[in-house]
Amino acid sequence: MSIDIDINSGFCFGVTRAIQAAESELQKGALYCLGDIVHNGQEVKRLELLGLQTIDYDDLRTLPAHSRVLLRAHGEPPSTYWIAQQRGIEIIDATCPVVKKLQDRIRACYEKHRNDEALPPQIIIYGQPGHAEVIGLQGQTNNTAIVIESIDQLDRIDFTRPIYLFSQTTKSVEGFQALVDAIKSAISNQQSAIVPEVHDTICRNVANRVAQLQDFARANDLVIFVGGSKSSNARVLYKNCVEVNPNTIFISSPDEVVDKLSTFHTASADRKNVQRSTLKVGICGATSTPRWLMKQVRDKLTNL
Ligand code: SF4
Image: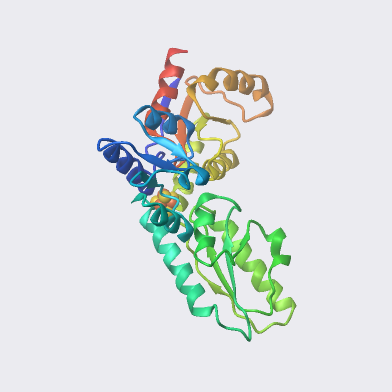
C-alpha cells in the first residue's frame, strides 16, 4: 500500500486567516467565537482546548461588556455588529476578505434598487438556506433576498421583475450556471423583457480545487475523503471525488477508518475493480479540513 495526502487539500486562505487570528488573540486572554470557527469538529475541539469558547446568538446577547468575540470567516449580518455595539463587546473580525467584498456588493445593489417602486427588484442568492455565510449575505438586504438552492425552486422568482443574482462563495460553478440558464429560459418562456444581472461570486479558492481534486482521485485506487459532517464544501468535494472514483469513502475522524474500510471491502465487489499489486491510497479533504487531521488518518492507516 502506498499512501499520499493531496497537496491541494486543506484550509483555504480565509479559514487559515481566521484560525491564525484565534490563536493569536487567545494569547491575549479570554476569547469567544460566534458559531463553530470552522465546519470541522476536530479543529473546533483543538481550539477549545487552547481556550476558545464557542457561543451562539443567545449567548452573545448576555455576554458582559468588554468581552472579546471573534467573527469567523463566513461573516455576519449587520445585526450582529449592532448587538455587539449595544453591549460594549469587542469584535475581532476574521470575516474572509472575499466574503466581505461579496457582502459589500450585495448591500450596494440593495441600497441602489430598494426604492425602485414601479418594478421592485429581487436579489437572489444561490446558496444553502440557513448557512452562516448566507445569513450574513441576506442581512445586507434587510433579509429581503430570496435564497435559492436549486432550479426546482424557480417558482419563488417573479420573472416580470428585475433580477440580481449572486452566489454563496462555496457553491458549485456548474450548479450556478444551471440556475442562470434556467432563469433565462423561464424569462424567455414568459416573454418577459427582463435581463437578469448575473454576478458569479463563487470563490475560486474552492472552485479551482475541483479539477485538481478529481485528478488526485483518479490517480488513486482508494480515496479517503476527510471532512466535517456540517461542511457543505466537504459534501460538494466528496461528491466530486465519487464522480471520478467510486472507491471513495467519507470519514470525519481517524477513528472511523477501520469501520468504513471494512464496509468498503464488503461492498468493493460492486465497485471499481482494484487489481494493482500496490494499492494506491489517497487522502484528501475540504477547505475546512486541517492538514494535521489528514496526517492522523495517514498514520492510522500506516499502523493498520
Ligand atoms: S472558501 Fe473562499 S470565500 Fe470562503 S473562506 Fe475560503 S477563501 Fe474565503
